[in-house]
Image (spheres, rainbow, N blue to C red):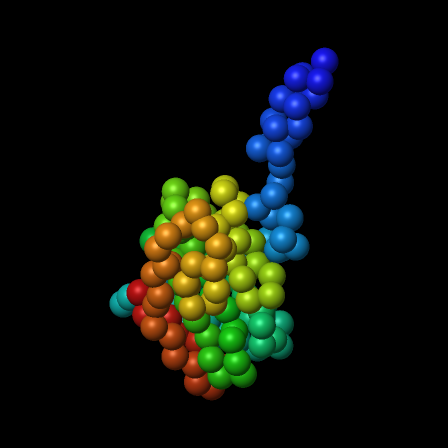
Length: 137
């Protein structure tokens, strides 16, 4: 009987929701269109990216980006594809993105802060002026 309890405990720990237990929340989604390789977003008071420290998934025809507002006039844009097993990253809390598949975590510059992923996320150039954020793909 004790052996069965041990197996049950092991199975429960392997199937737990541990990757998202860090308090991360699913990111809001923004639909966007790229024109000549550039996505332009209006960042106003109603935008999910209005506040410093906020983040969103930006979906476009070629894929999904993770965009974070890191300072009043600074943003980062990263691929949303985890470098571990290509799952789409959708969790975010305290300036850390979390992959839902195996719990890899990345900071807003795309650097790995917790594995199993070993490689950083691809980063895209951003420019912000006059309430418009441009992301060059």
